[in-house]
Amino acid sequence: MRKRILLLFTTLLIATSCNGQEKISTPADFAFVFEHASCGTIFMDILDTTQNVLIQKTPEGEIANTIPLNLLDEQMDEIYQKLIEIDFFSYPEIYIVPDEQIRGYQAPSGIQKLTVTANSQIHSVVWTDEIFTEPPYMDEINLRDLADLILEVIWSNPDYQSLIGCA
Image (cartoon, rainbow, N blue to C red):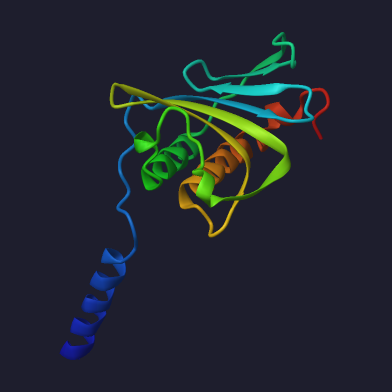
């Protein structure tokens, strides 16, 4: 019986220590502005969590729609954990995949800009989402996954879905 308890304890200890990164508390001042433009779309989405709004602009830069869009604490936590996981704060202001990694381009391509405030620091990164890499280039994949996470949060919001032209 003692061996079983010791084995169970050891297994739990190993499982928890090998579970990847430890969750870091989301700072009280965490906020971000995410700007997304896709080729072929009419509007550019700008999610501003400092104001809890989503702004849609036309390609000419005119405001087409503004709606309140409040993210849940769980969504903010998930996004912050992703930022930490990919080491977002170490990315350059303008992220470009190195030429030797590029194997092709996709169309339409997207442009993203993310400006994050956390722990009294502000960091912005701009990147395009048009490049195929071989072998997979993790920095580029991480930014794509981050953008996909934020876009899923936006697009799944009922207020966003109720906008004209959204299905």
